[in-house]
Length: 251
Ligand SMILES: [Zn+2]
Image 1 (cartoon, helix red, strand yellow):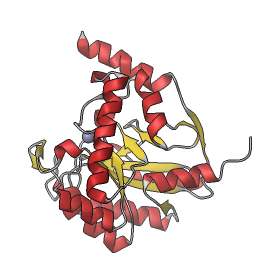
Image 2: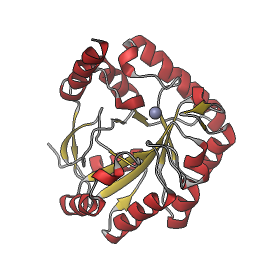
Image 3: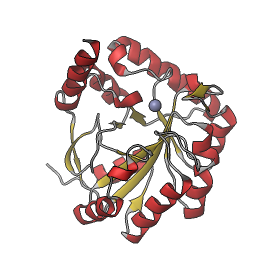
């Protein structure tokens, strides 16, 4: 019964209280993001990003620092500081890594405030500008909280963001071993370029033996090569949001 109710609540979050935005960059855009920040998302993916001169977005939960998640070591504070110093964006993923289906708006707001304070203390007054939903779960009552604190929120619903979108729940494809075989990446990149859309990808761990939620370094390398060949602008989420919004025609 609870699973059924959660399903209904996810649907309500997907279709109701849409915060409309027009995504219309002057050329197609790709954003790469990593959720939770397993240590390998920095130690393995960081060099691939550096090799291509690409900046990504790392969605952090202060409460996961130095711990384990999905049986993998998570980031240490120095990893977060290093990726920030390298020019990557740090975004918010709640403090405790909890589904928004399990939080009242006040509890969610407290979790976001706690994460903001935690990050700010470690990154020198840094302010996070974008948000990713843990487990992709977006409760209906969550959107106004996210909208009040961030430029945009990212879910895990497949697809390219083009034209009218919900800025509180942007679409994204999973750089995940369980999902990658189902995508035609060439086609997705081609469509993003042709439609001048915004494709966001998210992943977790990165290694030659990834979990079902992670990918290999070569998967990231391939996606970046395809995006560059199609002349996509590769930007972290908040910067991409500004590009997409910046080109919005006057209404
Ligand atoms: Zn997560």
